[in-house]
Length: 263
Ligand SMILES: [Fe+2]
Ligand SMILES: [Fe+2]
Image 1 (cartoon, protein in one colour):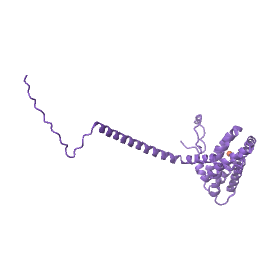
Image 2 (tube, protein in one colour):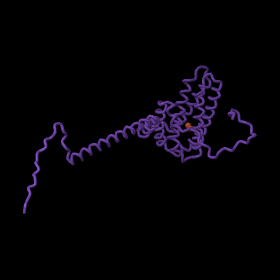
Image 3 (tube, helix red, strand yellow):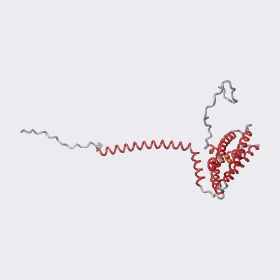
Image 4 (cartoon, protein in one colour):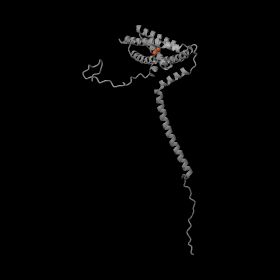
């Protein structure tokens, strides 16, 4: 059998080109891909993180008032005040009532600027309403829920009257009338609390309980007065709600209400 000699291929070692990158093997390719994927993921996380941080920052700025409020509340509830020296809750509230009434009397009889007195009225009244709604009313609600619900409505009306008063120029002829309206509203509200609610509270709670509650209320009241009425007022949701039922259509021939916009 004739065998032909196959030409043998010259096996010459290929020299690596100068500056040529060494060929990556499968392992290194996989590692490179992983690194790229990790980098991409990291970048995505960084972007998401930055977006979240931005959103959180925005939310934090919007909710700063709320955060302050929560911190104050936490401080009031978790601190350990000297309850023996603290006033009883009802006594503390009565002292606030008299102070606000006295300040309003001062505004009503003032001849000069009322700005400083109005500031004190607002700081004290709003802080008082806040501690009643956040600490006192929830603690005693079961004793007379009707009085509490009525009280909450009167607080809302008081805040409304106060805002109108605060937006009134000292030269406005309505100033005294608005002081009077707020004064009557609050005096009546204070009387209802003191006559209808507080006796039930004193009967249901021991002096120790009243002092413990009074200590928390005093701590929060002092913090709220320090923060100022603007910050505390902003924590109330006083926006009017939509009516439960749509109001009846006005008959076409009905006279237009005073102050109604011409259509
Ligand atoms: Fe009240
Ligand atoms: Fe009160």
